[in-house]
Image (cartoon, rainbow, N blue to C red; front, side, top):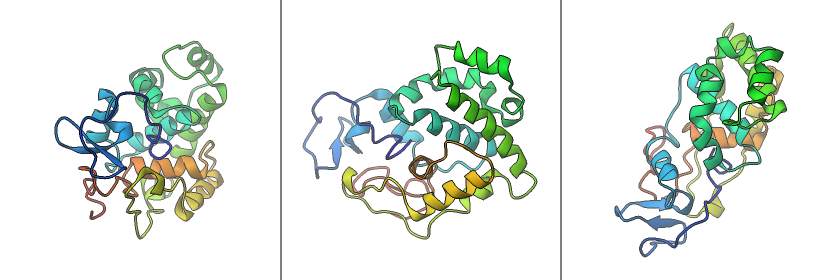
Length: 217
């Protein structure tokens, strides 16, 4: 959700006020945000309250992986607008329930206009639910994913300086594939790492920089 989640900059109006640098826009509330979070109220709220905050519960992390999968090739704004429908359609992303989905559930989801109706991505959500359950026999999904947290985080001044993948996201992708997960490529996993606070790619001049508590500014 992240450089791939939200680096999908929504079209829209000019910046509200003078920018301190090319990377951020100063809003009417006086707060500095990247351009993608400065226009659409939904994206601004998401940026101010959710993006980059740690997720350390299994259901929440499984949901995020699923949504990152559905986002591939689309804008994050599209997924965020559909998130309530996704949650309803996928039983609040309860891995135990999704893991038992069969062809009737796949057919039901393909008829649901409120979500992204992509057969391969729907099947990936089911496959990944089953893989999530298998991981409980060891450390569990949360510890598994967070085990790939890097020792350092980027310090971007502009959107262009934000990576789209890293050695850790490549390693995480490979490890998840070995555990039976699908649609978890290195770029998608880097977006996941950004979205859940494993790396802090808030711009240095953003008011959200360092807000996760995982990294210092």
